[in-house]
Length: 420
Image 1 (cartoon, rainbow, N blue to C red):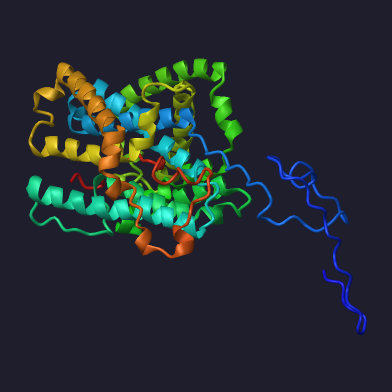
Image 2 (tube, helix red, strand yellow):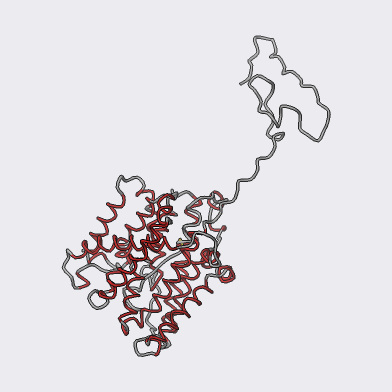
């Protein structure tokens, strides 16, 4: 680096550069051409022109459209649940929607978790985007049932997810394990084995709804393994054409299954023995439902618009639509408006219920609602973290995953193991 002096001799001083005339442009060789080795002293960082800022990461309209359409299906299916038993056609639609809307959300959540490596800013995002909303809305739903649902003994427990908050607890666990799955050679196969073992183990327990966490795990792991080119495949014209007969066949099968199969299989919240089936049925149903759900998810994504539409902006607010629509559905149920004996269980009432629910969840995804509830769904909480975790987050797929699908955000959910 420095030329050491020999005995009492000084090291030669660097050659003084002649001052160039002051102009509006930088001196020749300092800004417009790189310095060659040995051509003179290094240019000070102060003299170097500032780098242009990195371009902001643009949101993908395809995923925002997919999240909005999926959250509408989630809310509509939740509204159908109390009246589905009164109509076989409604029950068939209910089974069809439940067979893919939750796997679609989980697969997208896994896809956006590919870069999660438990860095400080990622942990901060996980806590503020998943853990804090879980604690807030788990408490809110418990108190809502206690005072509005006529259940004064309803406890407030963060270990027993209520209604649709289970997805946030599951997403928190899945995302923490993302680095582990990336080290395995065949992660989807391992996840399917774990899910199969969970489906025949009724003694797992109810803490954090661990049965669902394990049985839905293969969808999250599959999302971790996907690449952008895989989503390009489902956007091809031939795939969109094949999706029509796929859903037609699935609807026909759902109409048959409405009177022959228990819908609880789609919730993945119980073992086979708890559903009055032999133990070996659990693994069989795990693999069968996984195959069907992945196919229907591909068909659903094939129909999602790729361009910006009027509802593209709503895709960023699906976390609000997901967490808030449950109060509307449960409120109507507590008030007696939803049920097999109400007028909403009739064909005209079910159509009206579907339209009202779709409009309501659309309004809940709008930017004003998202800003109003950001304190609960996307809190900053810089005061709670050290400086390295509170710094600027790097752009990438993991940034929008926790609260925007998922994450996803952004989220999908099914009825709790206890109708509460």
